[in-house]
Length: 516
Image (tube, rainbow, N blue to C red; front, side, top):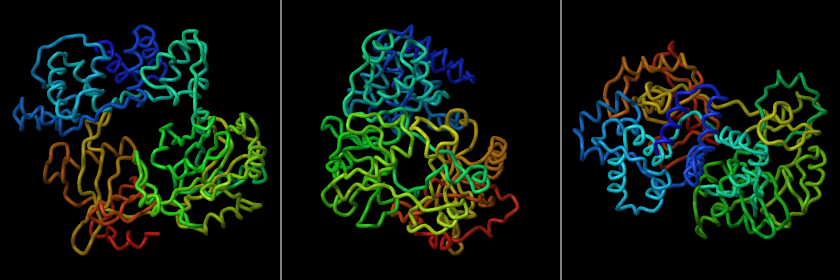
C-alpha cells in the first residue's frame, strides 16, 4: 500500500501530463503482479468492489471520535476520506499488499465489512489510510484519465495505445495477460469484443462555424436521445457495450436476441413503441439492471438504431471512407424489427439543414449529426470528420437553495448547487448542477455561500434564497423521485444572474410547460 499511496499523492500534486505519465509508468514497471494490475484497474475506473458508503464510514468514526469534532473537521477538510485518514486514532505502519486490500473489499460480506475496514485502517499509516479509503469508495480523483493510463502502458513496450484500447474491454483485472504482452508475450485473446478504440466522437458546431465547410462533403442524421452502444455478434457470442465499454447486455435481452449478424455495429440504444421513440427517461428505467422483468420488456421495449458498420463478416470496415461503410450498411437486412438503420437527412445547403433542425419530427431528437463522407472510423474526438449540431438548450432562471463542498481539487470550495423554482410563494428544489462556471465564478459562488449561509448539515449549507442562476439543460422528464415531479437532463449553470432579484425567478409551471 505504501507504493500505491505514494503514487496517488504524487499524481494528485503533479499537474503536468507528461510528468503524470512518467510517475505511472515507473510505478507499473517497478511494482510486481498482481498489485500493479489492481492499481491500474482502480485508476481507470475498472475495479469493481463492494460499495463502501459514506454512511458506513461515518458510522465507524462515530464510534471513535466526538461527533461535533468530526463535523467541524470534515467541514474544514472538505473530503470524507481525507478527514477520516487524518483523524483515525491508530499508530499502524504496515506495508499491506494492495492485493490484500482488494481481497478484503471483494470478499468480505456486508455484515463483516465495517469491522474489516476498521481493522485495516488500524494497520495503516495516514497516507496509506487515505489510499485505502479512495480504493474503497472508488473515488481516486488524481487527475489521471483512463486514456492516459493506457498511454503509459503503451510507453512500456511495443504495443501501440490504439492496440491496447482495441482489446481493453475484453480484459479483467489484474491484467496479467496484458502485462505479459507489453513485455514481449502474445497478444491476449479476445471474444465478443467490439473493436474498442474509443468510439468515434463528434465536436460541437454551430451555423456560423459550418459556413466554412462545403455541405456536399457531409451527410447528416438525426441525433437521438438514447445511449451510444456497440453491438457485437462474435462467433455467436452477443454483447452490447456502452460508449465507455461497460457490458450492458443483461439489461437488454430483447436487443441481444435480435443480433443475428456476424460483426460489430455502432448505434443508438432506444426505447421504441412502434414508430415512436420514447424519452430518455424511459430508457433510463432499463439501464443498470442485471435482469429485466417480463413486464418491463413489454412496457419498455428496446431497439437499436444503427449508424455505422465497424466489423462485418470478418472484414474490418473502420479504415474505409464513411460513404463506403454507409453503402454497405444500407444493403444490410438485419432481419428484426428491433434493429433499423439511421436515415440520412435530405439537404443541399446549411440553411436547409438549419430548417430541419428547427422542426424535428420527434421531441426526443437532440439535434443533427454531420459526418464527412471520406472519414474513416477513428477512435476519440478528431476535429473535422464528425460534428454535432445540438438543439438549443432549455433555460430557466432558478434560485440557489443549497450548496455542497466539492471533491478533489474542489474540496475547498462549495461547488455543487441545488436550485429551485417558485411554486406559489414557496421555492421547490428542481435540480442540482456542479459545472458550467469558470474558476473565477466558482470563487465568487463560494464566497456568496459562505456569506449567506442560514443552516449547516455536514458538508451541505442552506443559503438565503437571494441568488438567481440561469440553468441550461438538454431534456426534461416526469419523475416520481423528485419533489417537483420533474427531472432535468444534464443541467448546468450557464450564467450567474447577480442582477436579477430572486422574486423574478421562474415558476415551476414554466418548467412543467417544457415537458415534451
